[in-house]
Every structure is written in C-alpha cells, then in structure tokens.
Image 1 (cartoon, one colour):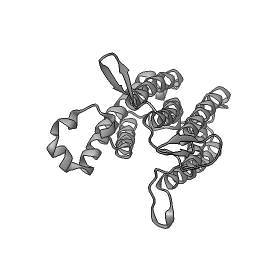
Image 2: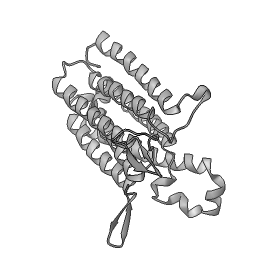
Image 3: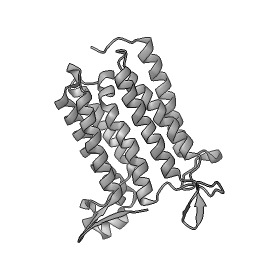
Image 4: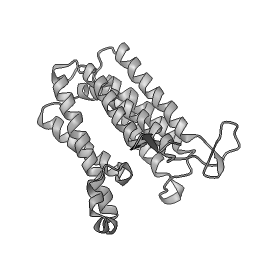
Amino acid sequence: MFPTLQLGPLSIQTPGFVYLAGFWLGSTLSEKWASQPSSSTKNIYNLVFTSFIAGFLGARLSYIGSTPQWFLKNPQAAVSLNSTLLDPVGGILIALLAGLIFTHKNGMFSRDTLDSLTPLLAVLNLSLGISHLASGKAYGSVTDLPWGIYLWGASRHPTQIYEILFGFLGLFVTWYMIHRSQGNSGEVFAAFLITASMGHLITAGFRSETSYLLWRIRIEQLFAYAILAFGLWFVGKVYGDPGRDS
C-alpha cells in the first residue's frame, strides 16, 4: 500500500491524485464521445466540472456535519485539500443533484447525455479500486486462498484488486458498446451500469471493512442491488424505445 507519493519535499496523497487523474482522463474520453447536438463538448465539460466542484464541496460539508466538534477545534481543516476529510457518499449525492440541476437547466437531460458521460463514470469506477489499493481501505476478509494478500496482520481477499479488475471490465464494456452501438440512445450507459453494479455486488461480499443494516445485510451490496435493479429497468426503456432522444 502506498498512501502517499513523495516527490522530493512534496508529499502527495495517492488516493486524491488517483481521483484527479481519473477525472481528467474520464473527462477527456467523455468530451470525445459527445457527438450529439444536445450533448456538445462544451456542455459536457461544464456539466462535469460543475458536478465535480459541487461534489467536492458537498463531501467536505458532509464530513464537517458528521464531526463538527473536531472542526471547531481545527477550523483550518475545513479548507484543507486532505482527501481523508471527505465524505464520499455525501459528495456523490451532491454531485448528482448538481448534475441534475445543470442538465435540466441546459436542456441536456437525455439518454444521449448519459451515454456521453459513461466513459467518465467508467474511469472513475476504475479509479475507486486503485485508490483503495493505494490507501489500504475496503480491505478483504481473512482467507486461506493462494492469491490472498497479507494485510493488517492476516492473509486477506485482495478486494481492491477485485475492484480494479471489475473496473477494467466496466471500461472495456463501455469501449465495446461505444464501438458497436446500434443507435439505441442510452445503451452504453445501461451496459456500464449493470456491469459496475454487479462488480461492486460481488466485491462487497468479500470485504471485511463494511457496514451492516438489519439482518446482516451489507450496505454496499444493498446499494449495488438498487443500482442493478435500476440498470435492468433502464435496459427495458432503452430497447423498448430505441429511438434517439430529441
């Protein structure tokens, strides 16, 4: 695990660097795919940038809200670039809300837009696994399997590597669907959504660091089930109404 990159006197947090690199690469791919008039390159860039800024601010505010006493003692941390002081769930929710508002205001709320954003989502999904590998988070449960990795005093499932492999699979599915698209608006997004949700559903089952609801239901798997169900419903909409959005 390598939580920091030391470049001379400069110490860079690896997870944050991975996210930024993934954001840049994913944005570049999404801009190249924005071929429809309703999803112009400029609008896609503005949508991604707006969602990113809103997501970062939302993640910080959500983290502050969960630990207000600590921030009262350390107010300077509120403007820190430390990626460990962010709440991913809060950031994602705020980013999605900002994205919905932006797309509605600019007439971009369409399946074409979702297809154009899918490369960004696929790269960020891959970045998540790489950042977990760098930080040591989302580690696996104890195992005797030969491919287990020694972490935190035991041989464990390499769940971060599982995430990375599924991340590459999601990126490949996105690339494949883009190049074989039959003109069904939303099919690229739907294929990625199903692939990514199934990957997280499987990976979460091997994690040791996890949260539970009642009846020992893993929160991560419940969230993945919800996304998978939405993806399957969305597939029905795509192929039930295959025409391009106006």
